[in-house]
Picture 1 (cartoon, rainbow, N blue to C red):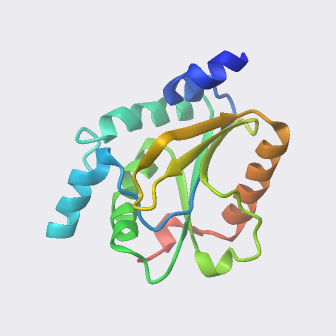
Picture 2: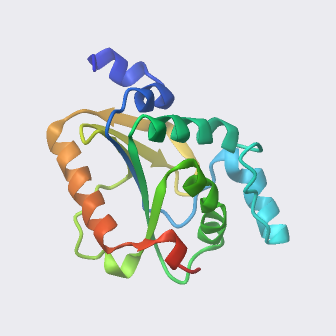
Length: 179
C-alpha cells in the first residue's frame, strides 16, 4: 500500500483491500465512544441490548464484515477483560451475537490469564498480518484526539500478530464465556 494511502484511507477501504485476515484486540474494560453511547445507556436502563443489525451503528459495520468474510477474510476479535466484568463488558457481551452473525469469530480472555503475554500498549486491528491500526482512547474511554495510528512496520506487525495469537489461543469462545 502506498505510504500516503496508509494514512488517508478509511478503515472501510483498508478492510476492502484485505485478503486473508483481520484481527482485533480489545483490552479496555470500558469504552465511551459516541456511536454506542445511546445504546449503552438504554442497556443500563433496561437490561436489553440492541441486536438489530439495521439499527444504530450496526448498518455501518455489518456490511463491512459480511463483505470481507464473503471474500474469504477470516475476521477474529479477542477481548481481554477484568473479572468481575464491568457494565460495559456486559453490554459488549450482549451485543456480540451481531458480530457473530455477520461472520466474526469472538473470544474472551480473563485478564488474570494474560499476565505473561507481551501486549502492545493499545487496542489494534491487524490486517493481513502487515498493517496495524492502533486505537487511542482518553482515560474515560472516548476517542482521543488523533485516535487512530497506522503503521506497516514489520516489527510492530509481528508484535501485534504474536500477541493476538497468544491471546486467541487462551481465550474462551463467546458462546462459552458467561458474564
